[in-house]
Length: 474
Length: 166
Image (cartoon, rainbow over all chains, first blue to last red; front, side, top):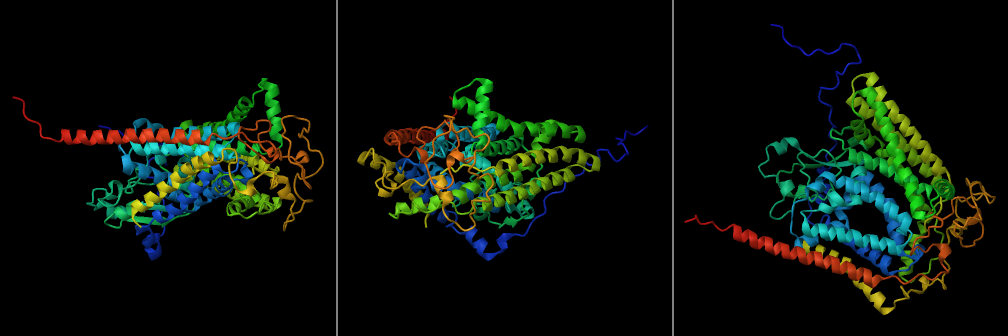
């Protein structure tokens, strides 16, 4: 009787690469072997000792925003929040992942509310399913609101935003388990989760030790004295840093010392993703669109674009005109990504959605770079405002000091260097993903080329916008 | 430090601005902040262009891309959508591309840019906002506390051994 053997074509273009297990990320050096780091992370003072000063500054910022000077350039809250904190934040994501979330005052508020009155209901199913889409929508809505109603340039608007977010945190902390808001609803958390994939540290469990564990998942559930993971991660199966805040709860709860904090190559997590999510890829592309529109609105051509839209559509209302421009700006990267994915799908025999989900991550390095480069302008061209506004709180008159910390040419050079690093990172990530995923040279090439072209288009757009002089925000 | 001390500090830090804001509004509704440095009439606002004209190391006004004083294409000085900037020496917002302060004619409510310094800002409803914030969140927390109490009572009741039906 003939035996049925599944035959494969013998030519080089065959799908031989589909079945073998994909290589996983190599484990980097365990930083827990450094006594100082191990002592800090196991300390009961960590991360509380960091939360205290951050909460104090947060209180000052909130007070200033709501009750301080109405003019943004004289408000210490606006300066600390948008000129100092916001530009520095992405740098921390690249270096230490979501560590900010471990010291974020919102997380602390959620914990306190939960302890006082928390009902500890399970996370609603729709949040688990669509939380990331809600984050995507929030991110877009907040950016839109900023331009239409004024948030960044208005201390009052920023104060209202802070109170709205605080309300969300309190509601979530009062009703749901752990840090539901941080995991499923915080727009900044969504940004952190995407960017922290490029970070150089990761928290992982030692699988060999975990196999022998009898502690009933103490890292996840916690113990009598130590809470478990606030973001619902199970370290034993965790393969991403997207939702790890390095709060060290699992390290303290694990009785076997199985949790490791490892150093890794920057961006390396993006090369080894096995379960890409389209909503995360969408967020990556939406952030690119947001950076584009943020840059555009600070250029002189923005007036021309507004005028053109007004003439073309006949719309005279600014919110409507901006909405049109905003939708177009966000749609361009998303649409280009969809187009590249469609083209790539013909070469790699996977569908467009899968390609979109997989390669959206490859543009996160460019996202980070464009975001950093954009905010670098605010930090270096307006950074003096931080000093002058904060010192004025203590009665010093430093209003006449220059706001710029570096010349325009210096800032531009730094911006272009950061962009170049981002482009290189994205290009390398595209190459690594295709090489890992597809065995044949032809499939690799057919997949990589459309995304490299897309990367080139987005790079040209970004460089063009950064080369034009920007308006100051403060 | 005990965790509850940290939590207490965080709560205090969070509540301070709320109470402070209410206090500030109750004390001087129109003055906002009492520090003289913040009075527009006392301290001139540092305009963006003014900062760019200060002498700084490495700051060359000649070699900056696009920083020409000549008319730039695409810059419509007569356009009502371009907000009037604060006059300053050196680089002039009116002739500098990009120095249009963002959203043009869409000066958002409450937004007080350098060019809007002379205009008195409308009083901000801080008390209403903070009051609404406190009311909403207070309501949420009371509801949660009631739910938690009910859940505990329910758990205690349901954990009693049920008697077999006769």
